Length: 330
Image (cartoon, rainbow, N blue to C red):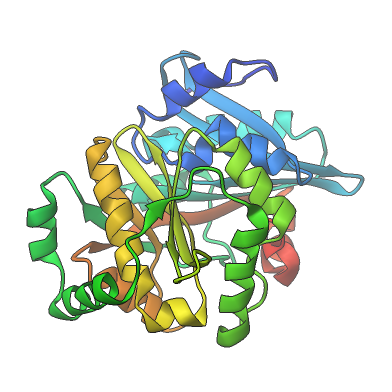
C-alpha cells in the first residue's frame, strides 16, 4: 500500500505546482493559485502526497469546508498520478486529516477513462456518486502543429464561421488589464438573451483573474466604439491549457465573435509552446450548440475517469452524494 502524508500549510506553492504538473492527469485546478482563489470563498486547501514531497508518485489537493456537523472535501482535477495509488492509503490519511468523525469527499479526475483505472478506483474504496455534478467528458485539441495545419482540421462549418467573424468583427486583442465591470456586462448580456443563471459575480472574477494572473490568457472582441462584445480566456500551465472563461453579447453572437476569439487564443497558446488545449465539458444533450462548436475545431472527444466519492463512516456517502445543493460553490 502506498504511504500518503498530509503536507504542512506552509509547504511552498512553487514546489507543489512543479510536483503535480509533472504527474499524469494534472490540471490548473490542482494548482496553488486555484486554491488561493477558492480560499477567498470559504475553502481551505488540504494537500496530500504519496512518496517524496517534491517528486511524489501521486498527489491531491482538496478544498475543504469544516462545519460542526462534519467536513466536506472536494477535489477538481485530482488526484493526479496513477489511480492504483489512490486507494486505502489515501483514504486512511484523508480520514485522519479531515478533523471530524463525519467526512464526505468527492474527486473529479482528469485522467482518461480506461477499464484498469476504473477498477483501481473501485478496489481502492471509491464509488461513483449518486448525483454527479458534471459530465465526465471533454474535447481535447492537439495544437502541437502550425496554425495552417490546425486550420485544415476545422470542420467546413467552423471554417466558414471563422471567416465570417474575421470579416464582421474587429480583430480580437489581448485584454491585459481587464476591468471586471466590463467582463460582467458581457456575461450579463449573454445570460439575458440565453435565459441563463448568473455565471460569475464581480468579486469572483476579480479573485480568479488575480490569483491566476500568471497563467490566464484573456482576449476580447470589440464593437465599433471599442466596447467589448465578447471575451474568452484560458489558463495555461507548461504544455497544457484549459478553457476557463467565455461570454458573448447578442451583438457578439451575430458577428460570430466566439470563432475569432478562440482562434486567437489557440494561436497565442501555440506561440507559448502549449501542445494540448482542453476545451472543457462536452454535453450534446443539455448544451448541444456549445458541444458542436467545440467538436468543429477538430478536437477529439474523450471521457475522463471523472467523479468518485467516499465517506467516513460509509453510511454517510449515499445521503451526502444525493444532496442537490452540493453543487453550490464547487
